[in-house]
Structure formats: structure tokens, C-alpha cells
Image (tube, rainbow, N blue to C red):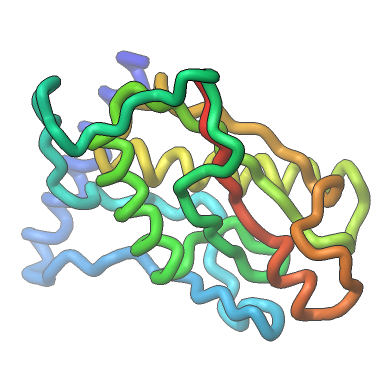
Length: 187
């Protein structure tokens, strides 16, 4: 962990030096735009660096907006909306980022809640391929939430690949609904 942090500090310092030395301004990372109608036309790399995100400060323990955990210890449905991905992509669209920023605020308000980020795929591709892609999608979502101030200890990831579709159809509309990260509330 220390080595990883040291590497990021060195790389960050070098990046700032290059930006200042060249007289340019820092550009935001390229964003892949997912469309429900088909594949993402731009081919950005999966390992896109996630920015620092919004400035979120911790809330006090006596916050009246904090939601108490249900008496039975679980919620049937997550209060967090799914985020969707382009075909064969694990990058976040602008819409997905905006949704995750709202999720981060909700998670900061509800600090007793832990989340399982489920990575899902459409039915195309092999079981193994879709399990790997689902894991990448879940990891991307987790990394972005962490960059927004959510503790990584509160987030677990799991990939279901194509095994748990939200829509059982066999067309583009169904496939777009199945390429998602779903959020389950866990204790």
C-alpha cells in the first residue's frame, strides 16, 4: 500500500511538472459515453484514471437525515440506482458518474450501510469472459466511489457475468439493461 501511494505521489508530481513545464493546462480524462443503442464508438482504455471527485465531508453522528438500519437487518431493494455500461466496456459514462456522485452523498449520510457492487453483463460472450468483464465493471464503480470519499471497507464487489439478467429479452434493449452495476445493501 505504501509503495502504491509513493508511486502515485511520484507520478502525480511528474505529471504536474510536465503540465507546468509545457505551459499547458491539465485536461480531464477521456470519458467513454455508453449508449443503450449499441457499442461505444470510442475505444478508451479500461484503466482510465479516476479524478479526485467531489469534496465530501463526513457528517456528524447526530445527523437527523441518517437512515437507521432496518430491524430485520436487510433491505429488499437497494435505494441506489443501477449504472449502465456500453457494449464490451467497463468505463463510466457521464450519466453513470453523476449517478455515482449521488450514491456517494447518500452513502456519506448513511454511514452504517455497506454495499455490494454487482457487475453484470448481457448474454453475449462466454461465461468466463462475462465474469471477468462484470468484475471490471464492479471494480470501476468501487474505485470511483472511493475517489468520492466512500470508505473502501464499506464496499465489496462481485461479478455475476451474464447469470442474473435484469431483462430476459434477446435484443439490444434487453442487452443494454443487463450491462450494469447493481447495488445490494449488505450489513
